Length: 404
Ligand code: ADP
Image (cartoon, rainbow, N blue to C red; front, top):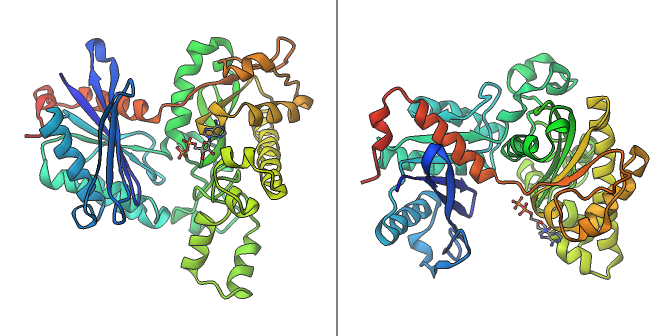
């Protein structure tokens, strides 16, 4: 069985999935797993796609001290215990910089290029690149593909790609990139099956998870994003503030004496739902909390989603459909109901029964704009891109090189 390994490596965890390649290039998810607690309490957990557990084991801290070590453990487990040797590996890479507008087959030159973007995403890019480098060193014949969170947004017009700052900074890469591109690309790919007519039109997609952003799609292509230079901008998130007056950052430095790394930690880890509520970064906990600050955090989240919906509607000059996706968007009927209610002025109405059942179409029959729930699948998107690039490669025989 030919398989593709999909890797999503972060600072303390490596998530992976195995897809089998079926007839006519179809992909079927077989295994989901992750190693988390890297450098603290390493633990491998994996299950089959139907949730049957396959592994749950802890490792001594010194044997999984970094991301490449975690990659090695996951690879050995797949090879030695499940007899799986993937024909290719697809990686989630947060930043493709200004030039990569699609996935790319990795070689040493590409890695060098992607290393240049570490300064644009210092918390994510190095961890994304670490397993790529170690696989390149240990299995040089194994095809690897980098799939970028930024690539889908490279279709933005210049006005959506710029900040009002001197051009030298734009030339250096200080641009409005937008993120969650693999999620939006997946939704844009599925939408023609769900609603063929609106898929050709103007669609706002709300990716509401621990990271959250919204994207304006015009004819299935990204026209605008609520995120910009980094994944800090736009909507409030689990621990990130979303849109913030840069004057606040100046205040933190000049009045609070914070260093650049203090500010970085603060903005990535201590703000958002967590900072505002003082209760939790998890929407489920906020929804069950009696604390008035938890209520304020939810109110703020809903308010900012609706404000940004107005902004994206202006970018698109109208809206033909609205889509919820990701952890909160797919699972919280209360948040969805509140957002649809607050967008009533745009002609949104809710079908409460469909919403409580997490139906695909949750708008009322009298809604001027259809509202959908579409579960996202970034990993499948990565597997699809990996397979396509593998099939496009000049030497077809190379498709059968395996990890030995
Ligand atoms: P990410 O992939 O960015 O880590 P997810 O898309 O998995 O995040 O979303 C995770 C978030 O989804 C959780 O932090 C939680 O707040 C929210 N979530 C998941 N299930 C529910 C639910 N049933 N009700 C409300 N929020 C939920």
